[in-house]
Length: 88
Image 1 (cartoon, rainbow, N blue to C red):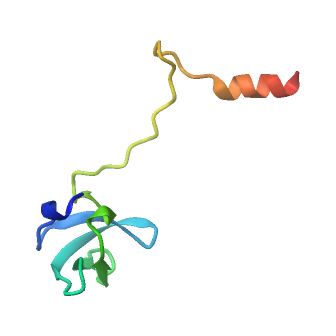
Image 2 (image 1 turned 120 degrees about the horizontal axis):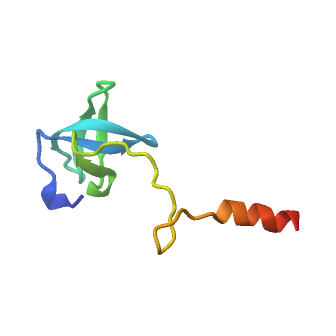
């Protein structure tokens, strides 16, 4: 996200301690960034950069990783090719 898109009082998905968590922005920090509260734990966190914010809460959903495909839309069989080359 960009700094101009962040609004105080809104809830965002944010990277906190290596995990994605929902945080509610409480106020601006006088040293830069924002003070926020982790909605799952209730702890206060400092968001130093808007880059840590992923999206407004509820808009980001976990997805299964997409299977790799080739240009013609067929499944990529790279793992199978690699295993066959190692056997030869």
